Amino acid sequence: MTFVDTDDVSSNPSGNRPFQDVLTARVSRRAVMVGGTALAAAGFLGAAPAQANHKKPKLGFKGVSVSTADTVVVPEGYTATVLIPWGTPIHSGGPAWLKDGSNTAADQAKQIGFNHDGMAFFPRHGLLALNHEYTDAAMIYTDGDTVMTKEKVDKALAAHGVSIVKVAKVNGAWRLVDSRYNRRITGATPVTFSGPVGPDHPELAAKNPAMGTLNNCSSGATPWGTYVTCEENWNQYFGTEDTTWTPTAEQARYGIGRAGSRWHLVDQRFDVAKNPKELNRFGWGVEIDPARPDSKPVKRTALGRFKHEGMTFTEDRGRIVAYSGDDQVNDYIYKFVGNGPWRWHRVRGRSPLDHGTLYVAKFNDDGTGQWLPLVFGQGALTAANGWKDQADVLLRTRLAADAMGATPMDRPEWIAVHPRTEEVFVTLTNGNGGSGAANPRTPNPFGHIIKWRERGDTRFEWDIFVLAGDPQKDPSVSLDDSNMFGSPDGIGFDPEGRLWIQTDVSNSNQNRGNYDRIGNNQMLAADPETGEIRRFLVGPRGCEITGQTFTPDGRTMFINIQHPGEATTFFGTPTPANPRAVSNWPDFDPAGRPRPATLVIRKNDGGVIGS
Image 1 (tube, rainbow, N blue to C red):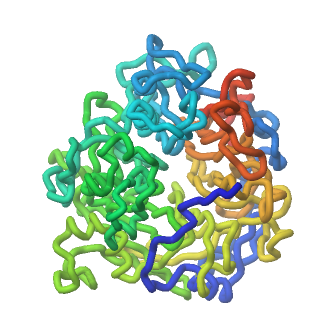
Image 2: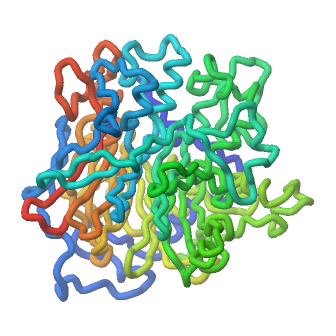
Image 3: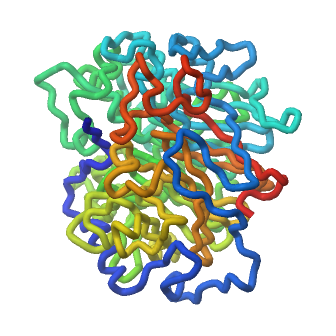
């Protein structure tokens, strides 16, 4: 059995110097921060390391061991409970989930979607907004997708997108509760566009109305209370049976091919030969207002078009700053900086996300870096070089970044900003290596985390936070059995400055080869000041750990268990006849099937999570 993760296959033909080269040179100049209880170097960019003995340690729990069990493992003194698994009706009178997979597309549009991913909690109304990345035919249909039908495509579309639901404590336990705010945004929901690529732009003139958001990976919450969901591997939904069709250079750069998801067999919306401009409607950050249930999702085109892993927002002198990684081998890290204070735009009825500059990162050997502006008329992005205007730059963001000389990275994923120091952290899941420098391992099967400090809009200084992996497989890894991990993906800070790291080891690698001692996917907590890392949670078989958000007091944490029971080389392959071949979490019903779900994690004494 062979599994291929398309994120591990580069579609970047540019000759830009890869981050592996930069990191190799950088590592030769300074030691790497370890994930144990001390520092191997003199701290970030020459600063003295924090003296942990002068303050209360941030990590107050006993780390858990690796696990291959079909369960969720949390530390002593903690409880993890299932909140909203796939298929939960978003209103009490909605259609019940059917454990044989026989719910219709109309049912699914009124239920929690499939494969939970990034999310955010909005405390004003007690709303949880969460993404649904993709679907698994062995799980969502009674008979799989060998025979494709329009109803099956419609059900898959209804299982994608975003769920917004009100959650509250009822008799001491968190529950989904009825609310006028509860709604689903799916692959068929009407949407609109704003920014340089407006709704009437000719490149958006597909043969069907503008609708839907797909492959919703991570997300971010804006300071003004909206939710931005990100479209990652949207290319996989498009294909064609037209044997004369070949992708353009632009389409190839975005990974468009003939096979796709086979939805095009029954829905011409997804036929790339017949409806090519539908492609241009995906790859954006999509803003949703959870407090306005009748509002239409808006695709904010000034943020660029690529495979957005997520969107992390912060402020700089009143301006909005948004970071995003393009999750594919040899792609880039981006930053959007607003033009003027975001409150100024909001008062005038304008979106702060429509007005600003998009940059792409270039990393240098000496620990410095530049943010290269992706602005029409600047650098290589001129009419003489074939660029039409700013809308063209944003529609072809990947190619614009290629032209400007950005640094190819090892699958840049989630990005987090420290709540006090404003240091920026990014996970690099893994990569197939390159000719040198910014990654000390070629190939890089385990991934790593880097961080940087901004020095104005266009400069930054960077360093390595931790190299992931098993020290028995790679002696450069400074982790040990108590905290080793690989393929970091989700990342985020809690209100007290703990860094939470979630892993997404691919199903072809889980529990075998380089990962034979690391177990199922997991979540760890780190103290950025000391470098200490402890394993906090291990998930069930076949899953990814993803999504994290907290209540403002830090006493409740929500995370997601995505694709439990998915096919793995180690555990086996589920089928419509036996969907429980790998996992039966969380219901453990002998006639049921595994279900992606949101977890509520609480400390039994009611204390702050992680303390």
